[in-house]
Image (cartoon, rainbow over all chains, first blue to last red; front, side, top):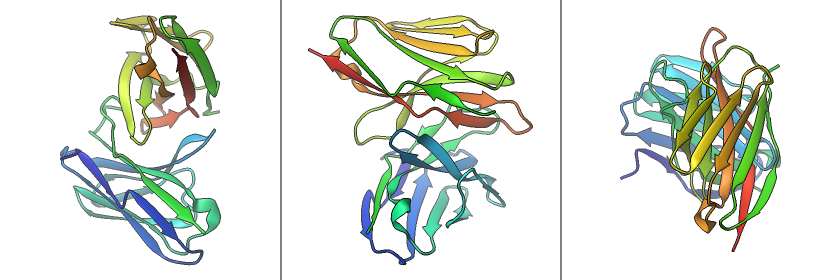
Length: 114
Length: 112
């Protein structure tokens, strides 16, 4: 099994629909992140969580919300999806204080909003 | 500023060396990284360098860091078709919380 599992792998949804992307990890890491990848823009941080009771906005949090249900689970919601949220979404985990030396990424969720 | 910049494309012939360049702006950077993304997959850490080092070698990979110019490069010797991927430069900034910033990624094409 993968260390960081994202579901679904692919999703097509309609404008205005609510959608949830899920992430679970078996690394035992306390930190979890949601990134969005767009061509030519690299990875942009949406939200991050340093432990179960800690949620922080990243650089592009508008239109998104998150929930850290347990140390191992971090879900991303689009309350009312819009076409410019079409992107590849990655969940990542890391251990405290290690920077990105031990970032572990999921395989990504490709979301298309039509 | 927090920018990490890299060129978007690089094309090389199989067997040649590839050099992927990156510039960053934050002088508080502690670690700098190279990640590789293969099609349909997430990013995987290739190598990293601490900011007080100027070179790190790991088999076919050589990382050079010019801290004065805030320039990082990744050299892949004897490039193979399996090296075709997107390579991301990233830095962790020591700005009261260890924030990691990723570049846009360089897509490496290896021609047989």
